[in-house]
Length: 61
Image 1: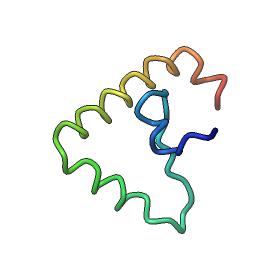
Image 2: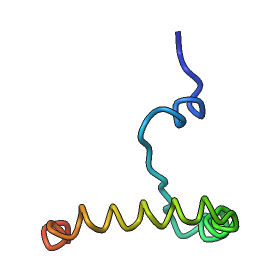
Image 3: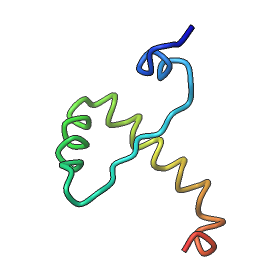
Image 4: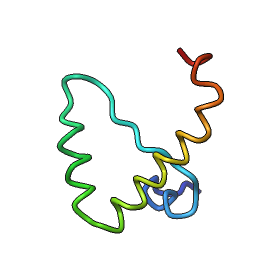
């Protein structure tokens, strides 16, 4: 039995990925941040990612 992808997002860790120059990802992100609680959650995820990646940032370059 397979689980619908969007249902899995409720219980499984996930990441947002916006890529490409031809996609309107800034508009999609801006739309999502109009909800204050979602904006706060997204900013929290960005901060957590920064804390995790800072020690290896030079290696990632």
